[in-house]
Length: 368
Image 1 (spheres, one colour):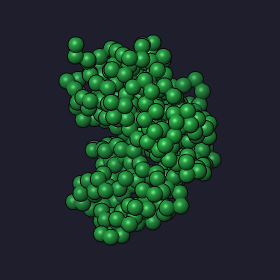
Image 2 (cartoon, helix red, strand yellow):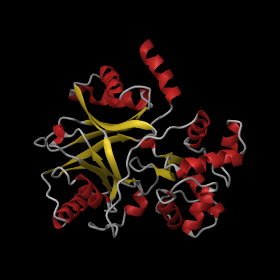
Image 3 (cartoon, helix red, strand yellow):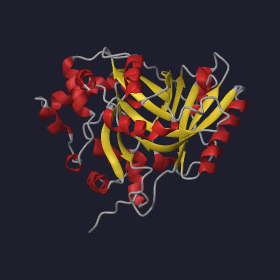
């Protein structure tokens, strides 16, 4: 019997709603953890995820990390001549493993920063380079006129959950404001790095088995118990994110069409001193997949709170934005400036965080 791969199949929807962003931390038996939260048996969960991964409906299954704890990072806005945008997008997508999200965006031309059309996320391993040094190097390769670094001072929301968020109504939110996570760095031993770098690699279909970590442990000469004990200690130190699936959410991989079509990067400027309160109130809204307090946004009207909302319909994304704006007003938080930067084209990939990989990459770049 052919296993359904559509994300709209009821069983697949149930699995993906959990697997996208509800399995926090490290689990020795991650697919059993998903199954328990779904109320399904683990074998069904593994069969369905394996089939969706092979069909390209799910683009990756992996243990995520809280990379803000392991590398210097920032959102980067790039200004380039229009005729260089597509080539720059392709170059960053292919040639820089430390650049994660690569997104072409557009905004109302009257808005501050509307001429910054290329947006990326960047992680630079601690001690390898500065964010400015890395961006200077990238800028020379892609022909950038200038760039703006927008590092995070706090994180209010970081997840995906497109399946779970599809039925949300504007204004749906958590009972309490979102707590802010800091970006304080953690120092790791060489052995901890070895475990972490194998742990974060995406799973191949044949690795979607009851115990996916034994083979990973053996690859670096550890027993599964040793490997998992180190992973659990990293989890306690808030280095581990979640075990998750990532849908191919824009490009169509099934007859159902894309999971989402529009994404808006929202900007809010609030009075100085109200950033934490504003971020907590924005981040508590279920529609937001990302919400940060960022710095360096004077080119963007002084925006400090930035977040992303996805949807199949542009009007639905705007309705979520209007609901958040109304909530901020009701909370007594003045919005001095706001904007939406719409995604046109995007490539989403994990950012590399290994200092050794960075050193080898720099050697290649210097040789060119």
